[in-house]
Image 1 (cartoon, one colour):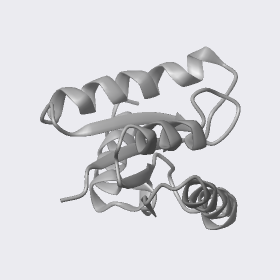
Image 2 (cartoon, one colour):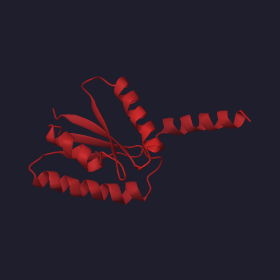
Image 3 (cartoon, one colour):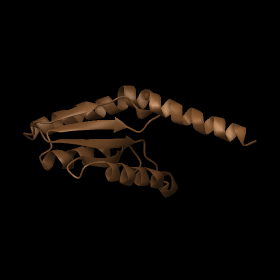
Image 4 (cartoon, one colour):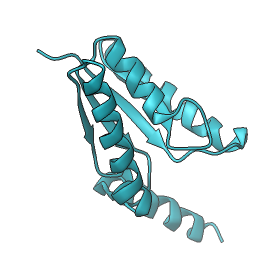
Amino acid sequence: MAKKASVLLAHGSSDPNWLAPFQTLLERIRGDLHDSERVELAYMELAEPTMEHAITELVAEGYQQVDILPLFFAAGRHLRKDVPNMLEALQQQLTDQGYDAELTLHSPIGLEPEMANAISKVVVRKLSDH
């Protein structure tokens, strides 16, 4: 069975205040997973580690399947064009280096029904507080 890992993909920012909640989220997710499940955080741009770096490191460690889970609200231009193009180039680079890895881009978490439910509850609560 192929070794599988996941990369949580955020947009990225040079502002540490913007980055901090993503690190907290990663730690919370890791706490909820079995120790054998590998998950890393990466950024599309403006922050480290980059998506390409995180995936390359995982593949070099022997992971043959890497799921990319975008922490985006919706699938805009970045997820429709930029990220797939980046992954296609990375896939070719890994293949050229002799790695046999499968990279899978998933839909953004913002499109999941649980996210809509959570956001709705927060908005209703905030509006009710007035």
